[in-house]
Length: 226
Image (cartoon, rainbow, N blue to C red; front, top):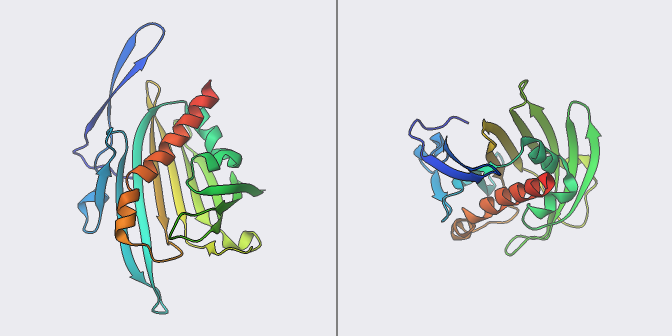
């Protein structure tokens, strides 16, 4: 993602056995999307997570109207890149940070660092219970200072059940080692809700919903480090 030149400064204190290390990391607040019509930006009260989002009405080729939610959530954390990768590759614990997830199952492993995961969602009102099949691909840079996990919809790679299936969910998680034990985490999502969702409900979910997911990932990685 390309950042706005006018980025805010994020200050973090990290306690070590020897002393208190003061770090200043240029990050957060402002992606280019926030400057485009229709995009909004919210930051959590603690200033730790910034979410840029767009909730729009669209029409498909058959003339059917639908809603689309697209967002990018950004934060930084004192964490290990290795531990974060272990969390993201462990399907069994995805339900601990993915809101509403009741069951998770690894469907199959594929060549080239890819795999397929099944999710069952016990969704809150007004959404119906649903399932989702995601095909993941993990990519790392040659220096090992960044990895990207991309999720694409793969609805035909697992038999349908008794609940409707989400067909248009895309995700991308980017983890970058900024140095000094600090990791930048960028979570991108684009999805089409199964039913029409009022705009006010989306606004009550942002920025808290995406922030909870990011913080859940960070907490799990911290537990792995311990």
